[in-house]
Amino acid sequence: MRTRTGGSLRCAVAAAVVLLVSSCARLGPDETIAGDVAAQFHRALSGGDGTTACSLLAPETVRQLEQTTSTPCDQAVLDQDLPDAQTVQESQAFGRGAQVVMDGDVLFLALFDGQWEITAAGCQPDGDRPYDCTLKGS
Image 1 (cartoon, rainbow, N blue to C red):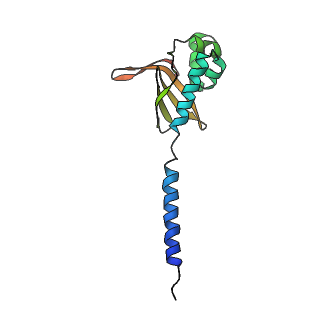
Image 2 (tube, rainbow, N blue to C red; image 1 turned 60 degrees about the vertical axis):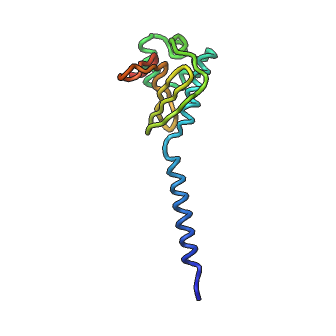
Image 3 (tube, rainbow, N blue to C red; image 1 turned 30 degrees about the horizontal axis):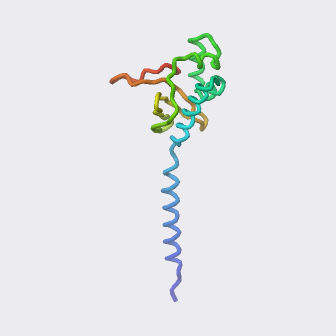
């Protein structure tokens, strides 16, 4: 008499492999959410909502902005010469960091406690050197 244990075992192993492979594809940070944060930041800026804009910045970026301007973040961020941007064109994640290219700006973000926060905005390429950013942490 022949049992189906071998066939069942093969199916179980195949299912486990598929589950493992599909879950590994999502282990990295979600760059789509980084793009959403960048877009939300620019919506806050265009709406004059400095409080929301600052809530999306990394702590070191807030500290640097307040230190260099001697003004609270919610006011200082609105006074920065940041470009207008509305649409995310590309979002890429690299480990715990992300770069979001918008129609008028390039932003850099990092993961802090599982949340994307903006570390730099108003960034322009500078030849072979790193990006030149209007708003950044140290």
